[in-house]
Image (cartoon, rainbow over all chains, first blue to last red; front, side, top):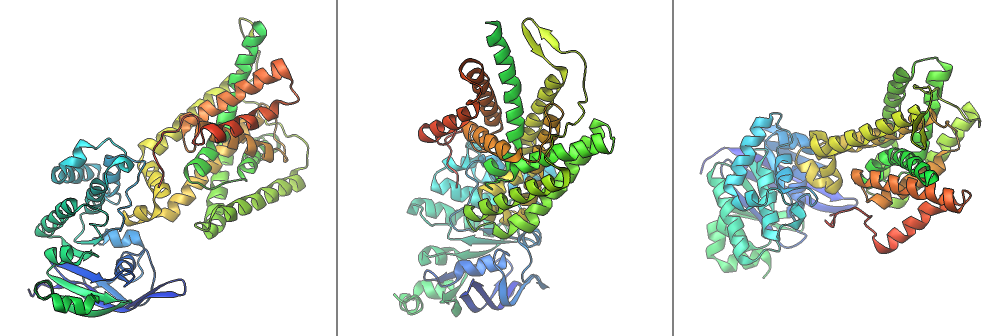
Length: 239
Length: 290
């Protein structure tokens, strides 16, 4: 458990207009880990991911990726540096085919053959997407769209995958499948930073968790400790 | 009967020109969802600059065409980066006001600099008209129709078969997802606006060699282009062709058999009917936009 720290966020603040959403978030992710950000709605979990991936400007603080300061880099540079963000509510391109969605995930990869290879890999992992390769993404079920969004995020071959609410709106069975995929991705060496409302799902895949509350980190625990101690969990999540 | 054939031919030629004139708007309004009321002025500028390059500076048509289209591409890029970019994401009203203002400025600046007289671009092709049975067509019209077909096809292929085309569609369907895939969306917006401007200008210059360019023509061109795009379905290139042909044919027959004075009503009546009964356009697919 002494792997090197790949992502170090320190004292990050960010705001939507005048509404401050992050009041100094600090967290670390080590190579090969799955780390969960948990907390109530509006605690700043998604905002943290959005600020890391360059969708939202940081007001202050620092984001370091593999030792480099990537604070306020534009989104395309963040992707190129090896971070990939799979956003909440999936955001597939509804009027493009499954295959077009997938291949665009590898947009920054200059080699067509390399994109072919990665797409073949993705179709191997998600046979369901292969079956529907020519179908418009907007016609997929919620679970299939989530799989597509994850597969697309993997097309840039990231070393850190940031997943925002991957089980949102899915049936328990479908959510289980998604988390099986997340475990599998992590086993293949991709570090995962996971935002999840469903704490039990989150703790079933994560090794560590940060608890966020109104834009601040209020605790950092091993997932096992939180899992085995419902009282502790309740203290942090307020019920 | 012979008259009907001539109306048919005229309608098809005009329809092809309508499709061409609307092509830039198919891109900017249909695909990018910017309600661009300056479209007609970009078309007009293509004609006026074409006249400057050929009739005033004495360049040959092909060279002038390339220069004018390139210059208009630069203009389109600048308009997007320095004007549209500021109101992006602030709703359609701001864009509408912005482009109406821009259209007034461009029309009046042209009026001030070039005057109100029609400016004829010398036609690249001259010679006797062709007689196909009872139907008469000039070579320059046929050539313009051919160029229209090539441009429509080219635009379609760029959007559907190339990397930048895919990046464009992705950006307009979901800009956030596009950013997260590494697409520099601000460049895609500017490039699309530039491309739409270039298409409008090439239509303007081509048609100024058949009719003539005039500073005040923009408003009518914009309106007809909106009619074509709405008839055919937003962002659909095959739809734009069909919309153009339908408008051209209905106007030709209405003008031929009913009255020429009321021709411009035809398109608007059709748009009202379309919006009432098939609001996604005649040829749009049923897929939902996000």
